[in-house]
Amino acid sequence: MASLAKRVRRDLSNKKVRQIVKKKLQTSRQQTQRSPNFSRNIFTYLKPLFYFFVFALFIFILYQITTSLNFTEFFSSNGTEVKPSDTPPLQAVAPPRESDTTESQITQPILTPVPQNTQVEVLNGCGVPGIAKSTTAFLRHFKFDVVYMGNYSNFNEQNTRIIDRIGNINSAMKIAETLGVEEQYVTTEVDKSKQLNVTVILGKDYKSLKPFKN
Image 1 (cartoon, rainbow, N blue to C red):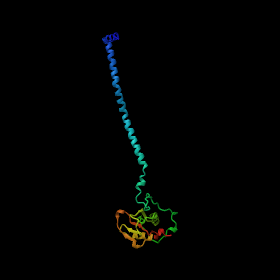
Image 2 (cartoon, helix red, strand yellow; image 1 turned 30 degrees about the vertical axis):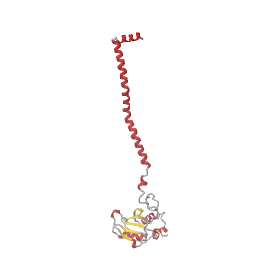
Image 3 (cartoon, helix red, strand yellow; image 1 turned 135 degrees about the vertical axis):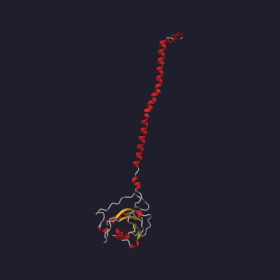
Image 4 (cartoon, rainbow, N blue to C red; image 1 turned 60 degrees about the vertical axis):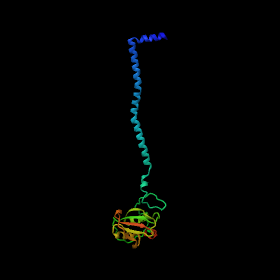
């Protein structure tokens, strides 16, 4: 062991040997320093990919949430004719086909011509399901422009009322005559914010109206 130590000291005293040893040490030190730098470079390269993956996952989850919700049903739940204890979504009322309405269901009164632009809303004021829809079909058969069908603010109306909204009682009287509503239940309550001519509020006497006779 002593002889080996002497030989090592003798070799290190040689200038060429010292240079070789010095280069070996420098190479080893550079490799040691390069390893963490390489790891940092890899992390820097993968960092944008990681952020992109997280962003894409967020967009995918958001899309799944929004598509799973039925917003149309949610926003159309107001203004629907329903039973007092149940509120289904509002359904658009299409004009009745010729086969949907028989002659026995409609008693055709003799009326003066009605302006095509007479716009009407039909409201259920007694809570009986289906009467606003039937009244809407009846009025459209006689060329009245029913622009809205829904529920009134309460279901306690005893008598059907016809309300003139623009100060022209003639349109309201024509609708009253068409439905069979007595003149005493035709009134004027001007409300231009509604942007229509006449409001029909169906009461508990709806069975006496022409759409529901026979």
